[in-house]
Length: 462
Image (cartoon, rainbow, N blue to C red):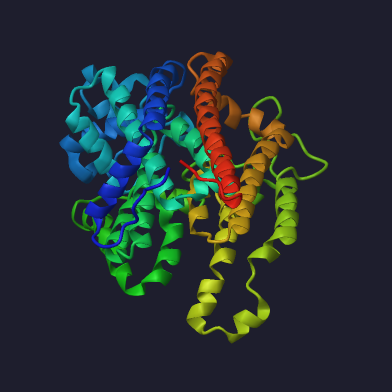
């Protein structure tokens, strides 16, 4: 997807014009994507307990009653405080029991989004969660347009761009239609910031990035990259943090749970669900029939060793040339180190005790910052490897995960393992859309190649 006219001057209005142009140009594919997304919403709602969406819906409704005081209430406390007829005390709108002491941890803009969504569709009923998923689906499809604007012709001609676009399509569909999660909003604001940066609107870009971080903090990894482009504009990034500072200072909002998650304290969760977390090196199950099992080889060490070996073999491509680095100014040195910084980002995924599988693709959009196509492809390979290591980590440490984390996670599926059929149907719909998209682009490439050959022979093209 490519905007035919680049943005030159102006800010959001120019960007909206580019978005409108891309939507018109690719309207057939967007309609197909929307149809698939809308079909996926009831399928996912029927087979999956979308606990994060349900919980955010509850906090969004509660915001209009308690304001920012909801940050000081645990899920169970809030569910019991709200009117019983609203149905939030059914067990599906709160975190699992082993996370029962967690208060609301999402930054303020995330809470505001769900508060507005529930205000626009008031009344607690079976349609409100579907409405939330629908809004997220619209945002997800807007993200596809923004990615197309950023990648331009690379979507047609460069392999990594195609793979990234296809991967984001699956990921975004699952996060929006299948999970009702905040990730599409975070990514949308990040991608808007990148479009604004591309056209030199750095103040607006920094403000928009700040709003992204105020939704979920993982997009903060883009701040150093944008800071290098315009250090002075970073004041707008920090101004956006007032969304958090003001409620914290004047309205009693507490972010203790967010800090507990970020700093890996056991107060967030006594269970470790990241199979790559080095703290699992010598851990054995602490509950269930397999409690006390010991290992001949520390399971968590295997993913770490594979990852380190992979990095040692591949990281050299991201180092600047020695002579070029020596002769560069300090400012140019920072620019030359950008690819290395980006390539090291997925290592963060080994740090957190609590990490769900979809966290792996949080860092996918950062590939857009890489100007070298070979480096961008290598970065995506690393993300794919980390996803594989996450899966391997679960199986090689099976006694630990089957003793607690996996059974707890399986409770999110209403029909047990039969829910995999619904998920397979969603993936099948997404795969069908991708192959239709790919076939069209392949046809375009073939026509372009024939046209080029004809022009080279001096033939008249009509």
